[in-house]
Length: 383
Image 1 (cartoon, rainbow, N blue to C red):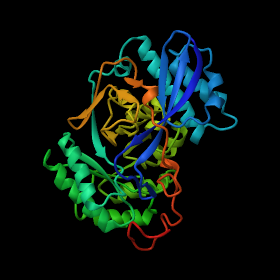
Image 2 (cartoon, rainbow, N blue to C red):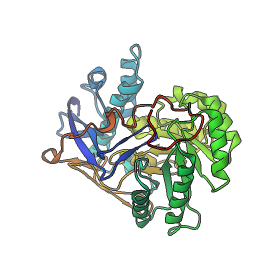
Image 3 (cartoon, one colour):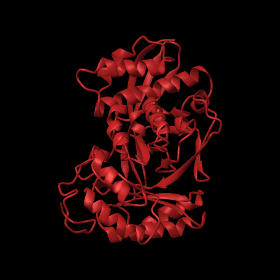
């Protein structure tokens, strides 16, 4: 079987609520979901999810190749663009192809990807994460009650701008999830909104009120020394890495001992996640993949010895996608459909009707005052 071509599609995910973080919020709750279809001469189609605007740059590295050679083709794509750079958007395109290749490999074996990757158990433990920064208190509580009803006993709250609000929301989540456990795991994600000394001060205040499991992305992603200083100063674990691409970008964090929970973005692909997880395992560190539509990396997470929990952002799926998995019992139960278990109904796809993730006020744009505020301010303060 050979790879012969590709097609790009787009659908939307209607979250039914505003979604975002301290950097910004998509008020409409409607975001775009790019889909890559990798075609073969054998009649099978591989499915990859995520932005792949640079697909034309990387596709020549896989065209005409046997899709079963996934890891070799992954390295081939990196090599193909090594002079012009392969971080950022280009890495996203490589990741989408990588997902589609793994999907094809498992489909050729007529088994779900979690079996192809050697997992023993189809259940992947997770934690609830509602991208909840833009919700008012009532909507916030309703969202996490929904997660509690699905058996979740761990939750991540978005914050980083108003420490009083952050503490109140962590305590509210703790109370809600106490229906499932006497000691819920609580995480705070501030999406690089603090500087090092702010992080130390704020964490001291938080930890005086509650037991924080981890603080996520407290400072800029490349500040390995800063992450290490924060980790030494607080009881909570420091989690980071979702915006890093390639082992070379993780190396400074590992060398500085600046990360306690190693994260990878699902949008960077399955091979990337497996390699980072192996590097983390060699250092006795747990790994956690960041959530994404249809949770494709859950298949890889199921196979790892050091997986601490996958982020689950919603229990609904994008329009036109049928996904063989169940969001329940505090995690993801993967099914038996071949490959990633994702089926695309092209007639049911919904084109983007709102600015989505890339809107001017959305979470993908860093505010001018991030890390530069002398005092906490309200979530609606002007930039």
